[in-house]
View 1 (tube, helix red, strand yellow):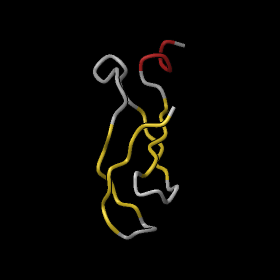
View 2: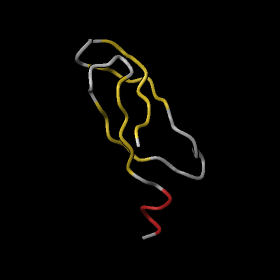
View 3: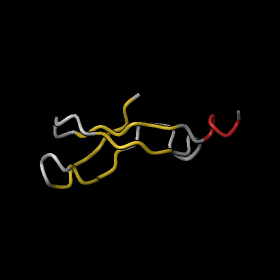
View 4: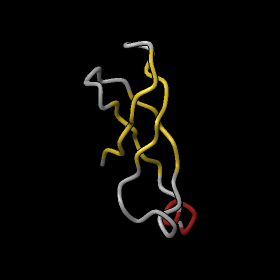
Length: 54
């Protein structure tokens, strides 16, 4: 049970408005706020910011 509490699965949704998502895990102790990663969005064919969705 503690395994999922510390490293929950989060969805990263594209800020380009395409609706494309990535699924990843994050360490809640190191990153308690919402994370933002710059990743590739194949719909717009460029790297954009992906923000954590709850």
